Amino acid sequence: MLNPESWSEAKFPADGPPLLAVVVDTEEEFDWALPHGRENTSVASVRHQERAHKIFAEFGIKPTYVVDYAVASQTDGYRPLGELFADGLCEIGAHLHPWVNPPFEEMVNYRNSYPGNLPRNLEKAKLEHLTLEIENRFGVRPTVYRAGRYGVGQASAAILEELGYLVDSSVVPYTNFSRDDGPDFSGCPSKPYWFGGGQKLLEIPVTAGFAGLLGGGFPGKSGRNLYKAVSGPLGLRFHLPGVLARSGVLERIRLTPEGVSHAERCRLTRALLAGGHRVFTFNYHSPSLEPGNTPYVRTPAELDAFLDDFRRYFDYFLGDLGGCPATLGEIGALAADGVARTGTP
Image 1 (cartoon, rainbow, N blue to C red):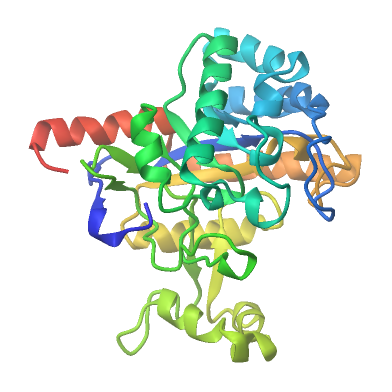
Image 2: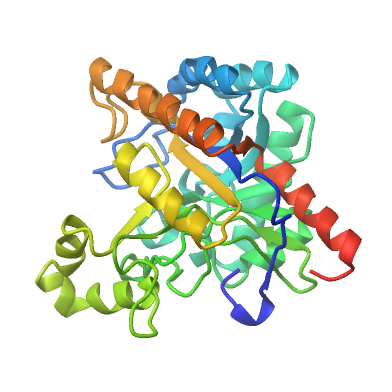
């Protein structure tokens, strides 16, 4: 998914409604301000996903839970999700947090928290272990993947193919994590695309993009190139990305209720729709549904506002815009059907 030579844009019906997938990074609770630790394996917050499911039910949404090993291997994690899955109310995928996922061969440090930085054999062994654990607990082998911390590497695509995955959602378009030893997605597109040796894997990126007066481009340059220019060392020194965002000139926005306002999400959605986007992902972390676990929800009042953001955006996307809900797996099947009918990706 990092090699442009292996990319081919996925096609979706131009006259079809825009599609919205809700994707939940389903994981253990830990202090985001502290280093990662193998001892942080509590998954008590998983039972609180029912708070969101009351809203999902109102809008006919079936979320995709990408679960990590701490969730898949503990009763407090897999049992609440298993009940939802058995009732056909969710989809289950995989989410690799290396520091809590056996085999434990690497040092626990910041660099190794990105799965793609691990030696190929260890990255594969960890994902294989997670895949089998999910299959044992839920009775289905996952085919949807999101790397923990979005940390894919040069070997990740081949590993996913070898383990039978069909859809990846690890790419965060126009974002460079290399300062923290993570992947560089600054050149990755925001629309779904086929990748891998045989172009059999579908990338459904995290929905992120640009809004604002210059979001669509200026003097021949795209918002992506403008943002790259102002987010370099000199631009960061003078806080240029923030200045452009506050002035409404150029904003980089992700489609999430975590730290992003409803107005920002709507601006991003309108800008992407105008650019021909048909697939959107609304993303959050499972611990955010219990106050105190993440920076986004610290109090019961903030939880109420957080959940209200779900309802407001779903009403906007599925109501005002006439969109339809879908899981990542369903979107993958729709894209594959298009390939089957046309014969080319």
